[in-house]
Image (cartoon, rainbow, N blue to C red):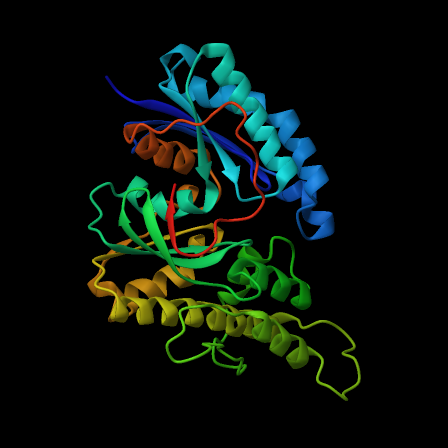
Length: 346
C-alpha cells in the first residue's frame, strides 16, 4: 500500500501544504506567499505572518487534498514543521496538523524545517548517490551539511552572522531595490558588470567551512556612501545600479561556491544538492554547474518550487521518519531555534 503523507509548513511567511506519496511522488504542492503583505516593512513581521497563516491554512490544506485527489481518510500520516521558525507561525501549522490528526485518527510527525531543506535533494532525485553535500541557503539560514543517509546529516559549517538571503535583502535595501531583495538583485544584475566594483569575499580561516556576509554588506554601504564624502544626491541608477547589483551578487555566490569546493575537497562526497530560497538564484546554479571540482559530483538542482519553503519537503522527510517507526505526540511543541551543530535527524 502506498504511503501518502500530508505535509504542512508555516515556519515563516509561506503557508504551504502538500501530499507526497512514497516519499518522492509529489501529488500536490500548494504554497501561498505573503511577500505582498510584508513588502511595506521590507521584512517579515511575525504577528502579521501568523495572522495570515491562521486565515489561509485550512483552505491551503483543502486545496492540497483536492489537487492530490485524496481525502483525509486516504492519508497515512500528517506531518508538520515544528522547528525552527517564528513561534507564532509554527503554532498555527501545529494546531492545524494536530486537529487533523485527532479528527481523522492519523499519526502525527514533527519535522525539522532545515533538515527538510537538506533532504530536498533526495526528494528531487531519490537515487542521488550518498554521501552528499547539501547547501541550505535562505533568508534565515545558511549552512552546509554532510548527508550520509536519508534523514541523517552532520553540519559542516554555518553562518556566523547574516544568512546569504538576509545579506541579499539588506543589499537590495541599500540599493533602493524592491522587496524581496534576492530576486530584485538577481533581476537587476542581469545587465551588470560583475567585476566593476571590488567587494570583499570573507572566507574566514583557510580551513573554515563557516560563512560570513556582514562585512560584504558593510562594504556595499561604504561603496555607496564613502566615509568623509558628502551624501549622494540620488540613489544609483541605470548601469551603475546594475553593476553594483551584479558585483554584490557575485560576491555572495563566490563565497557559497568556494565553501562548497572546500568541503568537497575535504570529504569523500559523491553528490551535491542545494535547497532554500537562495538556491533559486540562477547565477548560483550556473556557477555550481561550471565549477571544475563541483561539476564532477552528481549535481542536484531541484525545481524552483522545491527550494522555497513548501509542504512537499516536509512530507518527504516525514516519510523517512514514518518508515523508521517514529511518531510524534499530540503535545508536540513549537521550537524557535534550530538544532545545535553536530549530527541531526529529521
